Amino acid sequence: MRTTLRSRSLRVLGRGLLAAAALGALGALGACHMEPWVKPYERDHLADPVMSFDRDPVSSVYTDHVHEVREGSRGATGSAGGGCGCN
Amino acid sequence: MIQRIGILLLIVVAALVRSAVGGVLPEDRVDVLLHSFDGGGITIQGPSLLVRKQFAQKFSVSANYYIDKVQSASIDVITTASPYTEERKQWSVGLDYLHDRWMLNVGVIDSEEPDYSSKTFSFGVSQDLFGDLTTVSLGYSLGNNEVRRRGDPTFREPMQTQSYRLGISQILTKNLLMGFSFETISDEGFLNNPYRQIRYVDPSSPQGYSYEREVYPRTRTSDAASLRLRYYLPWRAAIYGEYRAYSDTWQIKASTYEIGYTHPHKGWLFDGMLRLYDQPHGASFYSDLFPYANSQNFMARHKELSIFTSTDVRLQASYDIIKGGWKFLDKGTLNIVYDHMLFDYQNFRDLRVTGMTPGTEPLYNFDADVLQVFVSFWF
Image (cartoon, rainbow over all chains, first blue to last red; front, side, top):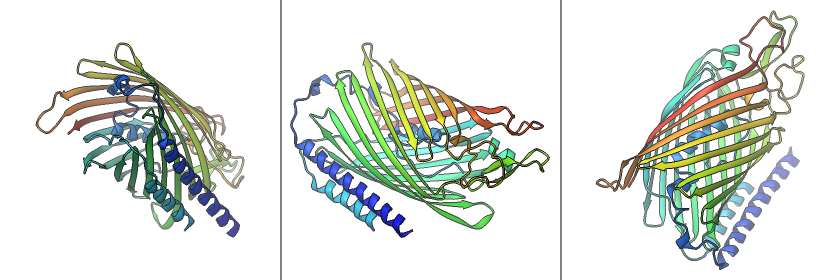
């Protein structure tokens, strides 16, 4: 029991440190200056509402919930949910 | 304690790292949605209200209130229990903070239903990189839940969920966007439904089988990764697709495929989508019919853990009801989203059919209609 608790704590600490390292790496990358291959004035198509991955968050969160409670899989949908609604 | 240190570490590192130039906060908008699900003997209806507002030029606050009114006579319920009605209420608040290219967000979700309570805290950080061609985001959520059972006030079981998320949004060309997500979710505690039962062969029973309660492992860890692409077509329309792969420590494996097309026409925006879900591996402890009582340490007959496929066909129409602004509103849309879903199970049998040898009943399937009607206003 004690070993399980210790290994779980180490795992959580490991993930925390990994996340901290990833954030540090993000900061370092942010300091890099790179010439973008798609210039800001060439992004009008990308800014069009038809190109939005999540045009209506209120609807996408609901749809993800409908799928998640009826499927065995979960995660990587882009929206954060909570609760259950599946008992 | 160590968990708290981990979370604190994330916050401190995020606050310390600095850079230059600016990102964009989400738009100010309000959405009022009515939703309806009807299928498999279950109807679920209710409203959802979402409000988002910027303030002090660096913050954006959001709040959501959501209700599910459930009437259930599902196949599980009618074969082993009695139809019931219940209500789930959920509220959530979130705060985004923009600092140069960094966006920090925190959120809380609280969900209550008669036999389940859930409180979820989430934290995230994202940054624009490489001339704003790339946005990388990291997120963490911690959910503390309590599972209860109607008619048994002494039954209270805890369950904890932790989620770690990585997201990358990438501009590939002038017309092509890519999104990548990876999420690990870890659960610990009481993970099964407190009502659902498995069935086992019982020659002494008139129907040839009897029921007993499900028993699940008390831990589960899952990994899911998705890749999305969206392409702008020459006639101002978009085509999009998504693939998601999933696996977990219960041996469930699944793939999701999605393809769609978005087309504007005058004040309208039309969207059509096809989504296929394939779960070729169910949970290792799932069975439609166990050989005898207590035949395994862990036993499930939850159809979502079985082998099955589902198909979702979606049609969406949005109409600009406010163009060019009106009083304090910049824009408004009326939206209708209709999904028709088909679920086809490969090793979950329809026990409403009686008089057959156990294990030879027809396989179960059902279809569902899902409707969303909502208005959105930008201000």
